[in-house]
Image 1 (spheres, rainbow, N blue to C red):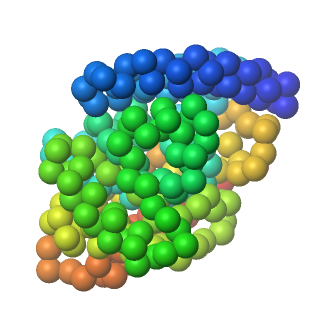
Image 2: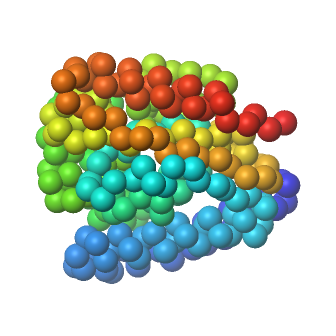
Length: 236
C-alpha cells in the first residue's frame, strides 16, 4: 500500500503542476467556468485514488442537498473530503487560512477560486470576515464550505466546533447541511500510506437557523455530526 500510495501522489502532484498554471491562464473566464475546470482535476484524483489504492466511497443522504445555496459544515479528518465535497455539492467557495495564498503559483491559483481568507491570529476579525464575505458569496448562489473544527482531527478524537458557521447561518438566514464521514481511517492525517476500502459519507438534513442563536446552531451541527460519525464503521 505504501508503493501504491506513492504512485497516487505522483499522479496528484504531476497533474497539479499542470493544473495550477492553467488556472491562471483561464482567470479571465467567469468563475463558474474556472470552477468547472478546477474540479476536473479533483475528479481525476478521486478516480486515480480508486485505481492506485483501491479506495472508493459511498454517499448516503444525497436527497438532503437543497437546490438553493447553503452552508456546508463537515467533519474534517483527512484531505479526502476536501476533494469529494467539490464534486458532491454545487459550485462552492472555501474558508481558508490566508497563508495559503502566499505560496507561489499554487496560491495564485487558489485565489482565483474566490476563497474567504482569514487570519487565524485574530478570531474576531476572522468571524466578521466569514459573516460579511460569506453572505456575499451566498447571495451570488455559491455554497460556502466550513470545517468547524478548524483543522484535521484524527478518528476517535474530538475538537470543539468553532462558531463561524453558526454565525454565518444566523446572519444570512441560510440553512446548514451537516456532513459526517469516516475518511480518516483510510486516508490518515500526516500519513502517506492509504488503506483500501470504502469511505462512507452521510449528508444530513438541513439545519434551519431560524429562532436559534449562533451557539445553538453550532451545537446542533456538532451533535448531529459527532453522533453520526460514531455510528459509522471503524475499520481495522
